Image 1 (cartoon, rainbow, N blue to C red):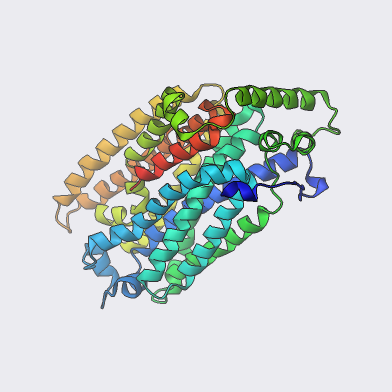
Image 2: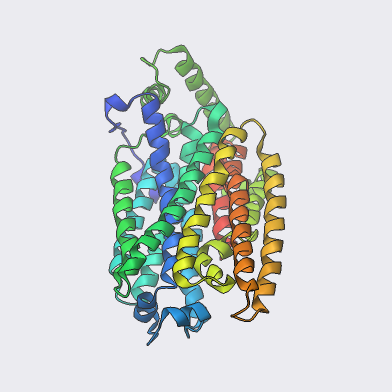
Length: 443
């Protein structure tokens, strides 16, 4: 069905003054903005859960106060809260699998544009949501957009990046995701001053709407990847795009033609192998690659990161901080996601993928074990105990270290592995399966 809409022509819409390294960096940054929006949405919902006006509007909690929130006395059904959070993950899982065909047939650029449009629609709905039903529908649509983007963006990054710097480009993409989450925490803290007005939580969604609009407009000027163009018969357009991305003055440039011939040879070889891979081949012919891609994303979720991020303000309140302090310290700890990934940008293509995962895994395990021990200690203290403050600060410090280790290793690397291990003919489906694993284990 999708093949009826396969493009029959291609026209680059980016301005010529961007050609060269600025075009490569702009395309990479624009793609990464999609991940930033996912990170931002995580922080939005986390901050909203401790806002009295949000709890009253969405869950009908009456006479709610900051003191009751700090004590955990909000009388909200935990299953309803779980549905509010998990609806995004369910639709993202479905969209990640569906987007593989869209990415292969309509192109990487079109798949990203669909994801951006869905995000924009969801942002409008959540900004104006009058009740929980509309909020959940908005988050479900947001999940569709995130599913498209989380599958498509790593593929685009891997296909436009120079071979020697592919790890750097995918790591920068993850840097944007972390920066999006960090930004949302600080925006949430800034709008906290509007309490008791609903602007205290709607403000974050207004910013979300604006940034998704920038992303949607930006996809109009995004170049299609040379590999997809050449594979789909747009050889001259692919060669020209390749030259524009490599800062070459003409398509006759020696390096450009060498890369072009390598892509053509790889595509011809894959056609000899039967063209685009089927889902059956993903599990039979590329079994080991599939296991590697799926399990890397699985362990990236099972290490506890989303239990920390989705409910970070609530976790800090439980540790002993009050509501304003929890929002402030959420913002402070979120910056560790940015600090931790900076060394990875320089090490991922030199030190390698595996050592980063080993180092990060050990560091995260030690931090979580310490947080668990300290939280057990806090739960057995009286609210007036002088030890409460020092224990809470210890939990905060360990969470900061945990987030830094995650950003250093299990944040970016599992997104790079599936984009690298699958050949071009299987890349979209392989990446879709890996991304689906991410969202499945995120439930």
